[in-house]
Image 1 (tube, protein in one colour):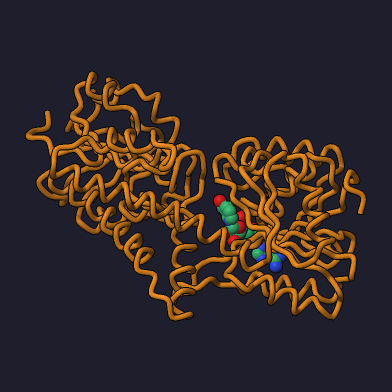
Image 2 (cartoon, rainbow, N blue to C red; image 1 turned 180 degrees about the vertical axis):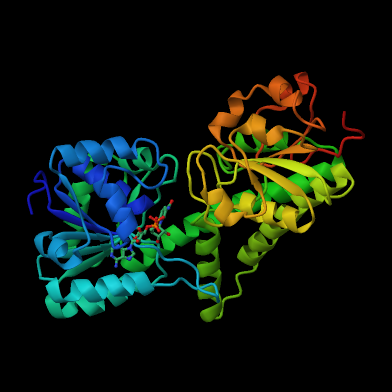
Length: 437
Ligand code: NAD
């Protein structure tokens, strides 16, 4: 296949990853068909709406459709029959036992199998357990199609930029032709391309997410110790992160990790290790610390207010991080539910989440903005690092609250400005205040 030639491509699953991959590849000049089986999602996309918040993605989708390079369909077989390059980007959620649920991938492979030809390269983009691409290869063997594991490392909130400017691309395949085709597709990204076997590629993804989760649990445990010793956890992280062997990222103490990837991928790796008779001691501890971190935050709220029952708490931020509308496994949601269980009244606001709040937290009061959320509250809980929260008028909020207390679960740089507005600011790793105005 000619390196410079645009490639007809199908992307199965138009979620955070699939739609980003499809729109970005179309932006690079490839003709892409995004296949989505969720009717509501497909209808929204066809109507020109991206049904989740991802900066820059709606504009990219619109431009690609206007240029005739991106089509949207529910006809997997027809799209795949026309496209020699097929990315599979369906979800791989957690099953009850912690293992990855591969049923969506299995359905796709079943549908692909009859239309596959020796010209096809099937690329597993979803995060899947080690050995999955080999299984797909086995199913495709009758057709002579090639298979590659090509894990994705984009982050929600910066998905487009991450896909177009990755730190590295990992291609796991035993087929030279597939490796060459994928390398040519990724060449414009001008990043290191690591070609390896499928098992190693799949493990790189799980190991990367497990390491990121480990960094988060590590700094949260350090913050818990700092709290007792009177050391400043944020400055400790800054001092550690300046060492290039450690690095500054994922070292912000908070309410622990969540979202659609880290918890589920960690669970899947732990489950997989156990199945193969390896006791993943460190990874189990990372999970335990994460759970303890959430509870510690709730304990802090309870201690600071002398109990939860009847207290009004303003929760700012419900998604698992700022810049996304994704609520999957959000620590903020879990904490809100536990606070409600403890008898607190919750006034919740998230700039990216609308009516969905009511679905997830039916007992909470859904607020129109941070000022509304603050109305009559005994404390403000910062639970997501939304950029919008960096520009709040804390004096205006101070005039509406009952107690001037901020408990920051995300390490936002608002200590100074909030203190100037008359708040007591309690960050992770801080000792409890003596009294709240
Ligand atoms: P998602 O749930 O947002 O999207 C998956 C989409 O696939 C859904 O819209 C679903 O309707 C669709 N789908 C399922 N079966 C289908 C079928 N048979 N035909 C057509 N469409 C089908 O999931 P996501 O967040 O995009 O994640 C996809 C994969 O990528 C997962 O394995 C995830 O772990 C991995 N990943 C996600 C991220 C992230 O930040 N979200 C980052 C890297 C990797």
